Structures are given as structure tokens and as C-alpha cells.
Length: 349
Image (cartoon, helix red, strand yellow):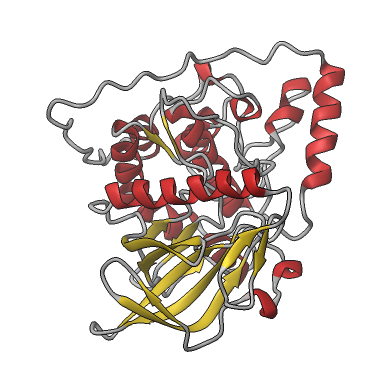
């Protein structure tokens, strides 16, 4: 599995003929990279393990290669399929934005580090630190389907601190799920895949490929997202990891909220921890925990988590207005939910 690019990933996308062969040399901005093997292939890209020549360092090289709208040419370059040029270019722009965004977050230990980025052969490449860990949903599977609270919760303060700092820079991740957080050998957690990230108050669309159970209601719209959006996804991720049960989708909960508490599902949490997760998963954004800092305070009231100091002269961030429930009839929510579930692939958390 490719831990660096999970969106759209499926075994059906594993097409060796589309992958660059082992030994391919890529000339980056900083170094030359010799590709070794494929780490994984998703619907939007291929990630390779590579050797940074001159440094003798193993890195991960992510290639923009959206299978739906691109072709691998005989010279190994990439080009858009006829009639798909606009779609290809839009994705390429998002890919390069991810590179710039990750580069700006290099000082956060809980975020995968970008080492280089460049364009070549009609496409773009992102060079990241090689992470020898496993995604959290795989860690849960290794432990029988769920991670005990005493193993998972102590690892959260550093991650929540960095998420708060990211939000203070005006960046939303918008795709926090059990497969986008990696459990490292030293026991720390790393947040991956900023391909869906956006700056708050920016002019770009706030749409994203949704993952049912982890996306709050405001992500079904094109506005009204803020730090509380990532808080919902983080709490839904913790809910899944602690219970082994994917949360009821937010749209279904609008019609009838049948979300059971983690304690009801057998999670060995304190009442305070249970309440903190449910508060972070409130359907209505206005009633929900608003920040990662507030979530940390509710989860760890006896041991406050140190938060980053405010940046000096911060750039103004215009967050979108927090919406109430989307104004639509329950029948519309049923149709929307059924349509989205039809896009969900079996086997994903």
C-alpha cells in the first residue's frame, strides 16, 4: 500500500506497464534520484522508493500520474489523454500546490517532510522523506481490529499540537483518515497526504473526494469549512481506531443520528475521553469542538498539551462562515448518501 498517496487507491490501478522501471534517473532541483521500486500506485499518482544520489539516502518520490486522464509515452514522459487536457492540468496544479504547502510545513515533526519538488517529462514529482511505518488502519488490523486507548491516546498530543499550528497558518488538511496517519517505529505519528489541503479564505474550490464516515457535513458543500472540519475528521478517525467500527456518515446522521458512543462499542475510555470524541463529532459545526487545541484540552484535561505560540505578525486568515445544517429535505439527504456510498470501494476504512 502507498502511504503517501491514498486517494483513489485500488488494486485495479496496479498497472506495471504504467510505472517507471527500476533504475530510472530523475534530475530534481536539488539532487538526482535513482528509482528502486514501486511503493504503491493510486488513482492519482505512483510513489517510488528511490536513492538520492550523492547523499546515499532512501527517499519517496511521488509522481503525478492520474490514470483516468493521462498516458505514459514510449519515451516515459506523461501527457494528458485527448480531450482530458483541462482535467490533467487542474490536477497538476493541485499536485504542485501540495508540494508548496508541504514545504511550508517542514518544521512540524508530525508532518511528512518534503525534500524536493520538480517538473519533468510533462508531469511533476514530489520527493519526501521515506517513512518506514504503517498507516493506522493497518496498525489496528494487526492488533485485532482496534488500538487500545493506552497505546493510541498518549501519541496524540504532538499530533494535535502540530495540527493546531497548521491551522494557525491558515491551512486545512481536509482528508484526515486512518490511512493518512502513519504509525512510526519510534511510536510517533505522521500526518500524510496534503493533496486535498486548502488555505482558509482562499479562492479555490473547497470540494474534495469525500471518505464516508470521516467527512463532516460541511464538506458536502463548497463552503463553510474551518479548523472544526479537521477536528471532526480527527475524532472520527480516533473513533474508528478505538472501536473498530467506521462512524455513521454525517449525511445519514442529519436525518437520524444513530451514532453510538465509543464506550457503547467497547472502547475502554474514560467518560471524559468519550465525551471529547463525541463533542468533536457533533453534526452541527457550531456545536462542535472548534480547534485542535480545544480537542486536546478536552482529551487531556489533567495534563494540558503545550500549544504553539502565535506567529509574529500573522497573515490575516478569513475563515468561512460556519453553516447550520444544509437546507435540504431528508429525501435529498437519502439520495445524496446513496449516491456517495455507490462511489465507496469495499475494503477501505
